[in-house]
Length: 400
Ligand code: SR1
Ligand code: MG
Image (cartoon, rainbow, N blue to C red; front, top):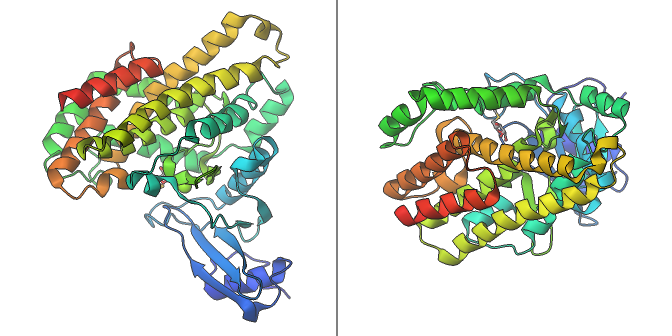
């Protein structure tokens, strides 16, 4: 009888056995080698290589607790959500996601394409690498996967069915706490602040009630605005990249939410790379990020408008309906980017773009730059499109 009929957390030998039992071309266990390569916050990720053929696959398994903190107990259903979303995305943007070979709702794991020719985008950006094609690829990914899952594009019953399929209470709760709550209160067990920035953050974030009121509005929007099937965690650590293409991975936080949340994550995470290189004075990289921010949002809007032109919704025939809809999404994206910019500096889940700045004074500067942008994005209603966002960050860069 198979040992994989009841869930348990697999180790390296189990994974080899699992792959040899389940996957064609990997039957001979003596030919297989396996290493755990996961560096994310939640799951276990194994690379299995068939040394006889040089073929390899990735096995990703969800454990009952988060890797980053055992006190975070989580449903392993997140692996189903991730796999089903990747399969849906593969229908719309097959070039931009990894192939799923199998998924298993007993072991809560999936076996997928090994993206061995790709690297994690965040690490590449930290090293100052520029990618001229990124804005084109990511805007296609967003327009195709977000706009095509909205009420404008889906049959009403199909949309509600998808909303039900991707209800994701536990991972949404992580975002509700880590993104929308904890960075704004003195949540000592989770918020670990950089030496030298504590007093500033105390005053500018924990004590600013006007800021809290704006954050509360955005939190309500996150909780209630089921606009599209989001990726839910669209940062540069969820993107693999090489010299030609990107692959978007890890949609386990997916749910029906406000489109601006995904787009805002892209804006914020490009901005972390920008801030790192601003304090390190890498001018050509800084310029590339600024152009990429502009092109990503412009292309996203144009591609979304083209998709919406196919809508069967009677009111979609009015150009102003579609333009208002997209302008509002972009306004939301800017505001949500302020949340991501805040939580990755103040909260539990930080980003290497900033934490690996060795010089403490430079790190303090980069953090304040991100947090000042964040506050402006959350509070200033005039910063509502990508041009005003760029105007803001370029002004702050000059004032450094
Ligand atoms: C407890 S999980 C912390 C963070 O890691 C994920 O990548 C999400 O961004 C989450 O907020
Ligand atoms: Mg992830």
